[in-house]
Image (tube, rainbow, N blue to C red; front, side, top):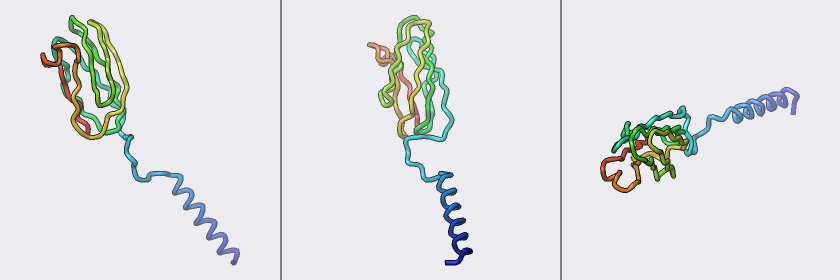
Length: 125
C-alpha cells in the first residue's frame, strides 16, 4: 500500500471515530431532552390547583405542593411512585420522572378527600 493510501485510510478512520463520538444517535426512550418542569400545586379543601399538569415522557418534574387548607392533605401519583403528605400551612416537594405517554390521575388519598373532588391529572405526551 502506498503512503498516500495509508494517510487517506487514517483520515477516514479518524473522521469515523469523531462522528461516532458526537453521539446524536437514536433515542432509546426513558429520558427526555425537555427542560425540567417546575410545577407548584396548591391544595385546599377539597381541590388541587392546577388540576391538570402537562409533561413530556421522561421529563424531570420538580413538584412543590402548598397546603393552604385547614386540614392535612396528600398528593399521590401512583404511576411515578410519588406520595407527599402536607400539613396545613406547609409545603412539600418531590422530584420525579414523568412516566410513558398517557393520562395519569393524582389524588389526595385521605379518607373522603378524593371522593370530595381532590383529584387531578398528569397528561404525558
